[in-house]
Image 1 (spheres, rainbow, N blue to C red):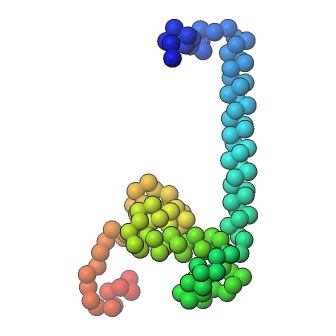
Image 2: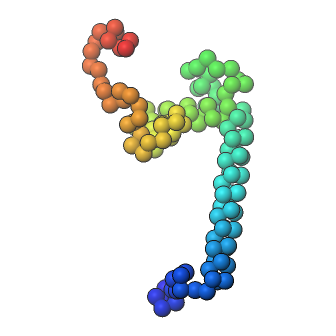
Image 3: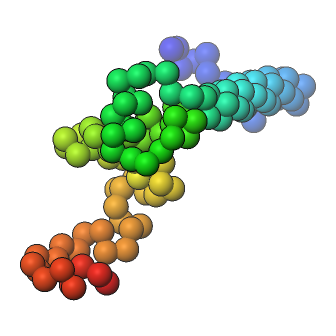
Amino acid sequence: MNEQNLIPLNKRSKAVQREIQEKGRQANKAKHALKRSIKEAMLVLRDCPLENEKIKERIRANTKLQDDEITEAVGIAYLAIQYAKKGSAQWGRLLFEMMGENDVQGVSKIPGALHVNFSTNPEDFKK
């Protein structure tokens, strides 16, 4: 961009300032409306029954959930756990976010998450 064409907002007339600010407000409203629509769609879709029979069968084998309880959200959570166990940091981060742990580092909000107990006594793990 040509630096000479960049005029600071405070160097423009009040009418032009208002016009530019109004365009910004309109764009912001549109952006928030789109985000709201996407969030509403995701909330509806997460509660839909899971259609992937292969994943549904794995969930049934590993949990006590009934077919009507196995939703898209359950399928995503199951896959996130499986991939996180294989070492995927992205899926591990998603798991923490799904559990409400929105910290960027992932584990710092979980009490005792970094503490490792090497005891072989089962009583030590009941704390």
